Image (cartoon, rainbow, N blue to C red):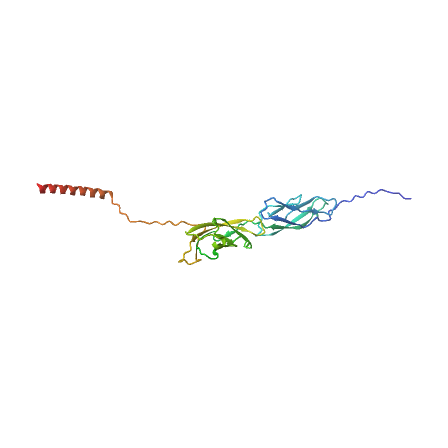
Length: 288
């Protein structure tokens, strides 16, 4: 004889698998504002039922933060492409939803790569930013007045610049050939000046590299143009560089000047009056 007895078997879930996450690469501009969302870390757990994964980063304060429940990665502090172009962020994922006992919970980790994208945040600088020069006109080919020397001190690898005359070249006597400022009357068809003239030229220097935005600076060149004469040595150029921060020089010229004291003036006046009176008395005495 046989019989069938129903048996109810209850399986208790045990957290036997550690959660995992997939490494990812995020990109962020170096001028991004704090709290900018970079992306999300996605954790998975092979245990059943799923869920209950928490995210956090080990260590103290950092440049990036991970939301404990959603896994969103956000920016906390400023970035600088020139100082550090790649950051690595280790994220710990922990499963709190499975099993019981002292061996729980289980956790895993993955590393996120964060690439900082370059942003042109430094304008070029010219040395010196202000120049004053004197040249003599000559009926010949172009004369090089000066050559600008510009760079980005914070980013010495930037060497591509564009140059343009934006002011002061009202008569079209000057042109640019790269960083060189030229004075060329023949090519421009201008007549030679008869009197000395002064031009205050403004030259815009802009970053021509691939990064944006293209920042610029303005250099000032004052040119004193002296007419050519037979006695003048042609194409001679005198240069005087004036620093940008000019300190005025005060010159005092003192001329000698004597000013008598008041008592001396009174004494001299009284003495003169007495002498006149004495002379008058003597003249009357002699007549009498």
